[in-house]
Image (cartoon, rainbow, N blue to C red; front, top):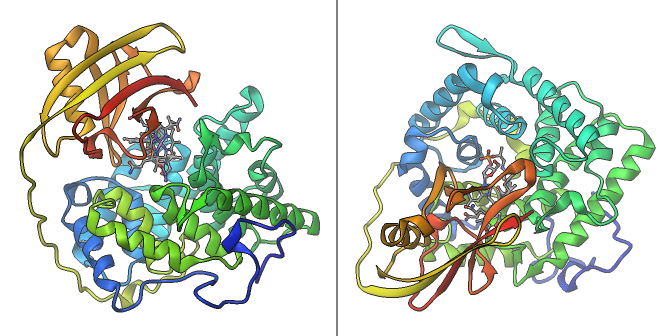
Length: 422
Ligand code: B12
């Protein structure tokens, strides 16, 4: 089905018949498949996949065309064990939602997850956590987490056929006047993409004509906004392109999918998607799949055809970079230092060297996550979700598109961590 877009969108999205690659979605060709397999290999050989608890990775592995059953099964078991032990108390709503999708993609009923003689109904838990989000939104005009997670919640509840009001969900995800719901400092293509996926899923449920119309209009608006953030196949930035491709595919519009796919394939040899978490968010699109396909997979038909191989190490040489810390939101903090680090060092390495040199000024704390280290405090000043503050990473005054641990610095670069509002 195709949406009729009333407003003309960015150049290549116009409703032209499919010549020269305009299509509803796409997947790698057989010739391009080795690139997907190289990413799958990175994922299944990584420590995060072998010992960690990342549902996005399992979803990607399940939606892929090639499989390693051992790795998938052991990750599924760990996720189930952790969900049974900790989901009620310590999972955010979005984390429960991702876990439900990972279970569905593994052909497991998320209402009955069992491990070590305990069981949990993840769908009921999400119904509750989603209600908590709605209550918070009503009381404080902000969700407990973010609209990204609210979109994941609606998507998972829809896929797992949970109990929730579809009319309220449609209303919740409808863009407000300034699209504030979809801003995290700047317009979040990732949030818009997951919201579109959720709303397209809702369209398959029983809805009144009014709600159907609302959904159609919201999806159109969000698609249009995503397209205004597209350039040479990049939708938002490289790390939102995978989710945005899924969203555009299910939205039913014609767009230049091959251009985005080609852009991603060009980035794979440069190591842009080497981190398993980043790979997990683009693999479904490379396979021509979307999160809506986690239901109805034929798990017993999987081949066991990917064998893990370890990746090669990197090399040394000295470079120097300038590193600044600053805060203007709450209190005034300023500090600048020039540090020498080996070639191939990361932003995070620079922060560590600065801390070793002048601990009082450059001390910082972080938490490890699937995206890499998340900077939680600098000079004792903590990022605070309740206040919507965070430590923003910048280079030459431009916000980084990746974590400190995976951003390789260049000679004479000017780095900054800035206490900011989102
Ligand atoms: C919401 C969000 C934020 C919020 C998080 C706070 C909140 N209350 O939700 C804010 C605005 C603070 C934020 C900050 C940053 N973010 Co952000 N964020 C997201 C977003 C849209 C959703 C994450 C989510 O809720 N996932 C679902 C839940 C269930 O999973 P979760 O694991 O519990 O999610 C947590 C982590 O993702 C963490 N987090 C969010 N962003 C980042 C970034 C990094 C580097 C790390 C380590 C952790 C982290 O916060 C989430 C909530 O607690 C993702 C989009 C995506 N595609 O995933 C981008 C995304 C993860 N963020 C990204 C980036 C680049 C950043 C920043 C580095 C931006 C900057 N220049 O400063 C900073 C982090 C700086 C630091 N201190 O280390 C990139 C990461 C790309 C990459 N290759 O690493 C993404 C993919 C967006 C994009 N397309 O560029 N982010």
